Amino acid sequence: MKVPENVRARIESTLDAVDAELRRRYPGSNGRSQPIHTVYVPAGRVFEDTPGEWGATAVELLDRHHDLLATLDATGSLPDVRKRLEADPVQDLRIDFEDGYGIRADAEEDRAASAAGAVLAAWARRCEGPARSGIRMKGLAGGERRRALRTLDLVLESAGGVPEGFVFTVPKIRAVQQVTALVQLCVGLERAYGIAEGSLRFELQIESPQAILAADGSAPVAPMLTVSEGRCSALHFGTYDYTAACGVAAPDQALDHPAADYAKAVMQVAAAQTGVWLCDGSTQIVPGADPEAALRNHHRLVARALRRGYYQGWDMHPGHLVTRWLATYDYFRRAIDVAVPRLLDYLARRGGDVVDEPATAEALAVTVLRGIDCGARSDAGAPELTEAVLRALAARAPIPSEVT
Image (cartoon, rainbow, N blue to C red; front, top):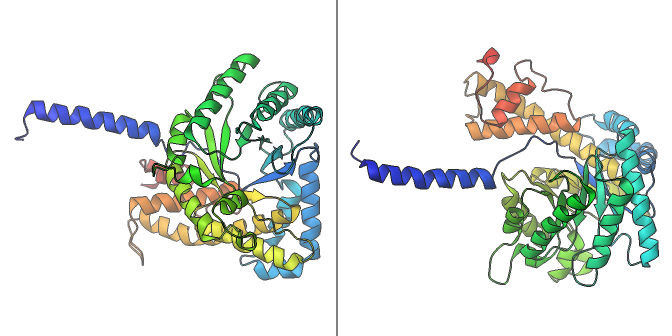
């Protein structure tokens, strides 16, 4: 080797530092199972039995519109969707103190915050209700900041600390410095309540163009994740605030508007390989006067989001649960049917019609794991594809010896 030793040493030192920084910033998945949705319920209208009531309403709607929903069911999933709605309809829920709640007298919001904390604690204590839950507080702008911080404080006080699975969503994030302040807030609350460092986690709701493209041409959403110091668990898209701020007329504001697609594409790239989830926004069209149109529209939007790699979205009405679960089960059942033969060929080093690379095998394995996690399938349907094998493929790690 003709490269001088001192030159090689400098190269190694430089690249080792690069490797370490890339590992820190982009650790990849941390093994958490991402929920398929987040349900938003206004504070003052949420109780311990709210998830069950939403599920019962969803079942009633499914039964009433069974024939229509059957036309959307490509994989015979509707009976399993009904069982899901009866047993475990809501995976993630936010008690909303922002747009869904509005501006109230301080005393009224104080009472609602204390009640919310009690509900969250009850869900955690009884291991009932959503696996993940929390609040969406008001934003950090000057006019709302004091109220937002007070509400979060009261929720934690009433809950007796940080309930299992708790997370708080912060709307209308526009600047990196706001995220730095959120980290300081978490540290302060953890010390005040004597809870473990790192217990408090938050989600950033991206609904301002300035979070996507700043005045200097940078994309603030990426450094927002860096300064969050590992406390940011997800980026959520705010459909209507964002498209309105971009000047989109009200009739055209929607999840599939090009302006929304652009923002979510930037968010997706910023969150890639960081372990931070990406969550699609909401649609305001609910099953009301025209339930057929609403159900078809929501099913279409969920299926569209899944094809784009947005595996979680907002649900604002019990009717959304029906089409959320149906579109999700359909998507992953079909995806698994495609993925499993290709993974078996990959493990056997058979080319088949498609010659897959390790990166594609990783993506196929992740798809199968997501489908199992959400309940679309109970397993991969092939004895060679155990969970250990799938996770090894997903991590590009050595395959367990029993299948090699």
